[in-house]
Every structure is written in C-alpha cells, then in structure tokens.
Image 1 (cartoon, rainbow, N blue to C red):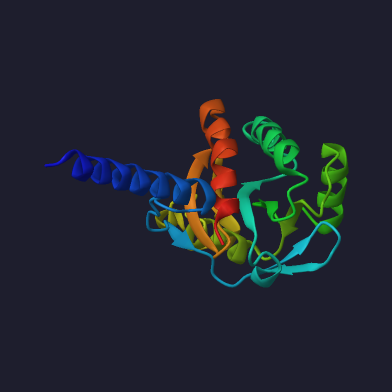
Image 2: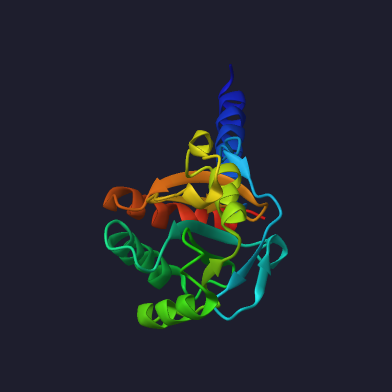
Length: 203
C-alpha cells in the first residue's frame, strides 16, 4: 500500500473512532446495555401522608425507589430508613426523582400517623411520599409489581399476612422495575446512589 493509502486509512480510522466516542459522550444511553426489566408497575391507588390519593399516573415519567416499612417497627426499619435518608439527601433537588415508602401495617399507619413520621424524619413529602391503603393492595404491590417479597408467602387470610422486607425496588421512567437492592447493606445503598443518574438520563 502506498504512503498516501496508509495516510487515508489511518485518517478515516481515527475519524471513525472519534465519531464513536463522540456519540458515547453526547448521546445519553448510547451503547449502554438495557437489560430486560424485572417487573412492571400495575395500576394502584393509595393514600399519602396528607390524605390525598396517589396513583401510578402521579409517578409516571419519574424515577423512584419503592420500599415497605411500618412506623412502630424497631428492628430493620430504623436503619433502613436512615439509609433511605442518604438517598433522599443526595437527590432531593432532582425534580424527576422520588421515594415511595409504603406501610405494611395500614391498620396502624393512618395518613395522620404517616404525616407525624414524615415530620420526625424532617423530609419534604413532595419528594419522599409515605403511603397507606388497603392491606391486600399494598401487599400485592410488594409481591407482584415491585417483586421485593415472595408471592408464595401469601396467606389465606389477609389479616394474618405480614410483609417485613428490607429490599427496595428501583423503578424507571417507564414504570419498569430495573433493580432490587438490600436497604440494610451499605454497599448496595451506595450502588443505588450511583445507579440513579443512569436511569434519570433515560428518556
């Protein structure tokens, strides 16, 4: 091959490589693997800490983390909520990010009780929303939509059923559950904090 041919080959190789890296840098999601979602969010209707209805339409287009707890819990819930507070502090100013904490004891956690709990946590309830509702609907969300509890654990009588999980679901803008995290493991909490921007970039 002539020197001129080698020059043109090298020139176009560099051009193609530069074009490729330019796409990676300036186009969100370019060349990023999108794994199939774990699950997807079914329609729901719950009541927030202010007594207002919240449905899947209110979180459409948002990235959010879903968790389950109850206000009188003294075991896994306090450390789990402290870890959620870290996520909240990091992204509380991000307009397209939310935290949704569902009670697993709605017979105790009324909207009023959840409001007092939110005030104690000192958080903005437009960004960190606390939800109550029918127990069977809440548990169905945990097991079927968020997949953070085993659906095989369903008991015949809803009154005897109980969810106590430290797992969180990360939901993308499309309402797809993308990853599950253990809210008691610092490494997984830190990974969640690192993962969130990736899903905020997706349109």
